[in-house]
Length: 280
Image (cartoon, rainbow, N blue to C red; front, side, top):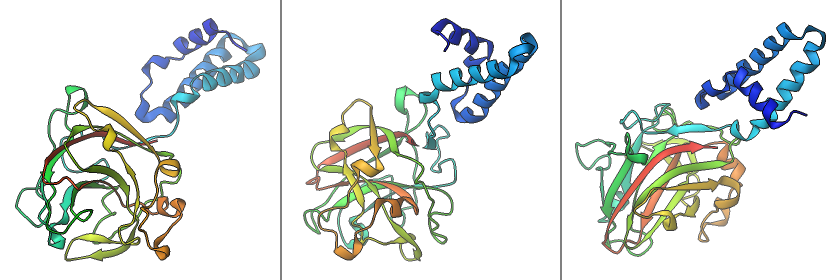
């Protein structure tokens, strides 16, 4: 096996410093091929085994850096669409007769569309920002507001097509804000291919008893990274009906959106920022 100096030498010769994470698989292949070709030119007698020794050493050394991940949205383009056309939007209990208020204005209650805010994480670019307050009209646990991002351009009305994301372990994102009261949840909804035209949303298969995690503790005035393991950290709420209980694997096979929901704020103003949403 190679020692540290030999590995560093191979990395340098293979131009590893030019690696771009967005194309990590293709770049890694090219790096390993470059090393093998270089060896072929310099040591023909042992070119095959030595090439494979190089490949084994480099691949092993970098295994932790090449785990599959998917950028849902880094917000760098500053618009309301993610990389695959999925749209960001806000929502609240108003369609149920509630009196919660959210900004950016939700669909159907004003002319303004969803907009990004600046700066994002690290003082650069853009981020999702929502602010507002939950009301009192429809009672405790039924007052809410939030923000969602649809997975892609086909995951909302009229098509309502889900995407299989079982190959990923979970989701991670940056978050900061101010929650004086109330609780914030990350939610993984389970929806059907039925479009509810009057609300331009896809029908829930759980009666909204979706897999969720309370992430209130992460919200401070400084950016923090939230890492959620789909299979370990998410669960359906205790009030879910027995006929609406699903296996998490079933849900992951048919993902339409990700949701952040704030409730029970007792009329206090909330402020929430989200950036760099990725599957890992």
